[in-house]
Image (cartoon, rainbow, N blue to C red; front, side):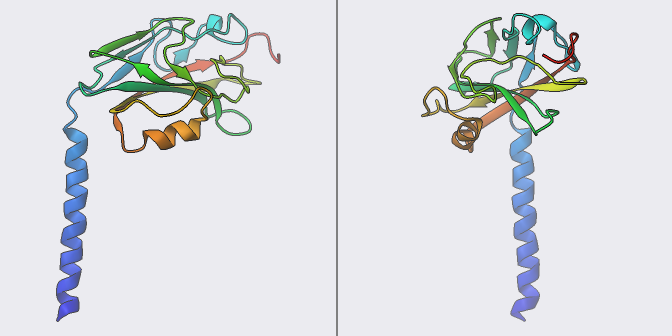
Length: 181
C-alpha cells in the first residue's frame, strides 16, 4: 500500500519543483541586453579590436539591468579555438547603478581576471585560421565578488553561483586578414 502511494507523491513533488523553477524564470521582468555600437550581433568585429589592430576592447552597452544588481561580470571567450574554449577577457565587480551601463572602448570597467594569453587584461580576437565566434557574456549579480585581480574564470564562475539575477550575450565574428601572426 505504501509503495502505491509513494510513487504519486514523488511525481507530484517533482512536478511542483519543475513548475516553481519555470515560474521563477519568467518573473524577472525586462530581459537584460548587451550590444555594441562597433558591431551587430553575429557580425564581424572591426579589426581595431583584434590582434591585427589596436587590440583594445570594443565599446559595449548593457541595458535593462535588474534593479537589485550590485555588480556585473563580463566574460569574453572563443569556443572555436583549436584547443577548446579560449578566454579573452574576464572582468568582475563592474560597478553599476541604474538600468544601463556603458563600457567605453579601451577601458578597464572593473577588476580584471586572468585570460588564456597569460595576462590580466583584454586580449582581442586572433584566430589561427578560419572565422571564429567571440561571446561577450554579461551577468548581473546581487553581490560584489570577494576575489582579487587575476582570478581565473572558474573562480569567478564559482563565486557567482547562486547570485546571478540576469545574463545576456553578444556574439561577434572575426577572421584574420593577414593570416598567421
